[in-house]
Length: 176
Ligand SMILES: Cc1cc2nc3c(=O)[nH]c(=O)nc-3n(C[C@H](O)[C@H](O)[C@H](O)COP(=O)(O)O)c2cc1C
Image (cartoon, protein in one colour):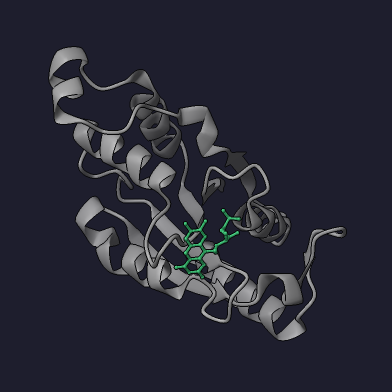
């Protein structure tokens, strides 16, 4: 199975990207393509810009990446209870090309943050709105207190209960 995976963050040190990299090691039978949303950077969405110049080709490249896989694995960073500006911008431009951004793909949605909330607000926003964008959420999991539960040198989750929860969450992709 081909899976497209990314962190919905443009931070070079993204902890959600650390989580994505680790989660992909728990999917040994899948072909996981991890992308960096920095490679799809666009100007801040502006209706006037769209009218004058159309939709940047990065939006199409992002949509093509989604079209090419069987499933998605996304980990959402939370800024003030919401998506990062970088991801929202990418998503908004992509939605102007195709409102069904997730293109009917099964998705496992994750999130993490240093705090006890584990970016749960943005995760629930993503889960609850996915169907508007043709996303089929199979399961979701928030990992709280990232720095307590993850060894960044080794790139692994150290909390064994969370490892099991993550394995269960990811196993829903095997049903696809
Ligand atoms: C502007 C801003 C707002 C933030 N708001 C939240 C928040 O609402 N909830 C939260 O758990 N963490 C929040 N944080 C902390 C982020 O979770 C933390 O920076 C985390 O590393 C972001 O994920 P990333 O490393 O994958 O980009 C915020 C950080 C910034 C810079």
